[in-house]
Image (cartoon, rainbow, N blue to C red):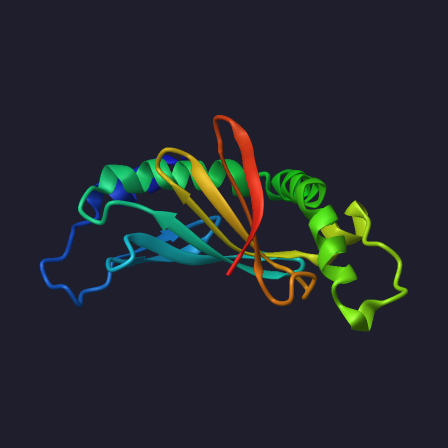
Length: 169
């Protein structure tokens, strides 16, 4: 993390008024705005495929968690292409079989070829990513209707890698 970001977080004052906005400018993520109700900073990360909603889970009253969380985010998103490929491969390996089970239950897809791991990885898109100061993360993917509009999630940590992938919502 740059010295500028450390100074920005250390100098940030917690407003006394509930409706006063706290935001931080970051060279990689742009403007991050603290949502006190949900205890995270919100922002966006632009990719070739669109934008990913970012959520940096923090303690709104403890700026030291802000610094740790931003450092964890930067570890992932400074090497976004590498992380994206690894997450896609993990999710595809874990869920392609389930996608084919759901496809087989859909009468409109009778006779269509099975979904391969490569097809699966090409069809899903990362739309949200959250991480906390301990490096625990969740990636939320659009399922391209393979699971009839449910969300595909991958969870893990920077220390241990990917833990699980599953269907939610």
